[in-house]
Image 1 (spheres, rainbow, N blue to C red):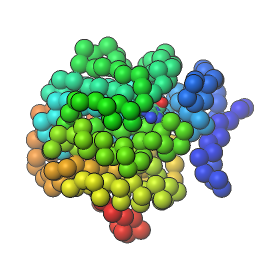
Image 2: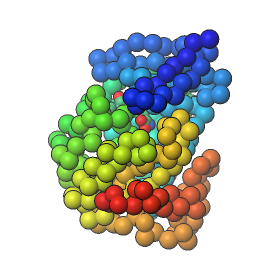
Image 3: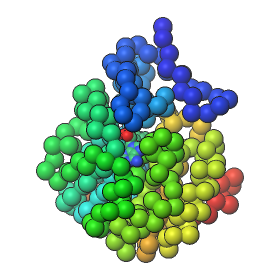
Length: 281
Ligand code: SAM
């Protein structure tokens, strides 16, 4: 029996049995493996870190997508940075009001491998005429585009390797530049129990730049170490002020069939444990 051992942290690891290996190799940006596990289904890892699994991807992709889009209420133009597996793009395009979804992914080989080995994640989203895939660095795109977006979803790897630039102040400044005044950006912000510095430093950076910012949380089983944080920010909108009644109305109108997201979970996700309360934003 062989095992995948995730070495994201120095003194603790998680391990998944590899029942069948489907791909193992390197792209110009990172090491990529795809394998099957009896409990998780197919698993994607990049540089030895679990990115997504068929079994629990719905938690992360629903919460990273429906919280900002339903909090916004009228989003038509969405930008996704990263998201190579296609899960965020799939969830974004379920909103009929979205007219354009641009996905900027640095590694085209990850997209191809996921379309081949993890097709349920994108589920045809790349063929949707509203979608545009740009293969390139998200930081460079954000620094140069003259498009403006209602919602931005930064679905990146952790702040190492190609993902590191997506956690810098300069990137957040450019996010603000490309957001409409009532736009919302959300970011994959790690597991604060183990990635405390990332949590606090990115919170400070966004609080300095945006009128409103904060975090919400979801329990993603294979992002181990407790709740996963999702950072959010907006120049002009406090997304925690959207009422349950409004969310229920928007959720019903969107006619989404979800497995994790619902308006009550949306609102509850903003509650913060005491050990994280002192974080800015
Ligand atoms: N849900 C996962 C998580 O929370 O860690 C992330 C999944 S997704 C596979 C992460 C994607 O970010 C990868 O496909 C990677 O290639 C992409 N990525 C990393 N750095 C990037 C950059 N600078 N610009 C665009 N995409 C980037």
